[in-house]
Amino acid sequence: MKTYGTEPGAPTPVQVGISELAVSDGDDTLKSYGLGSCLAIALYDPKTGIGGLAHAMLPDGDTAENSDRKPGKYADTAIRALLRRMVEQGAHYTDVEAKIAGGSDMFEFESFGEGVGQRNVAAAKAELEKLGVPLEAEDTGGDHGRTVEFTPGTGTLIVKSSNGDNGVTEL
Image (cartoon, rainbow, N blue to C red):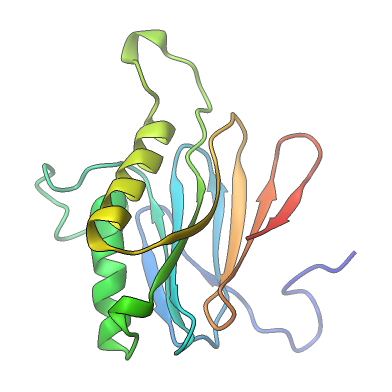
């Protein structure tokens, strides 16, 4: 079995923590650990190899007071911030594509209605549609955690699931 990042000379992935986002010109691998209800949002321009990854914790930043200071915290503002930073680095807005993973409902609280994970997925999809960014692939929902590794240069999103069978999915 091949393990990424442990081979001699292999570059260390850039860690994207909760409420963070990062943009790369394609040379880096961006990684987020421990996605439960949080959502990994990977945007990339396949023509330039520029892409980014966000680890969004909540769905709606437009109503939050601090979303301008921490845009990666919210699915909607994370997408806009990633797009803005990617275009500043040379990506073409009209070529950008998206992949998402996470949005699990780790705990069941019937009194709260739809879970945060489902709301994160719905918010991301709505924002992508509003901005005209096609969603090319997703691995969302369920009741298990995930870790993702994104390579903007190729647009590959590797999703490792903790659903008991240690599945690995390439999106």
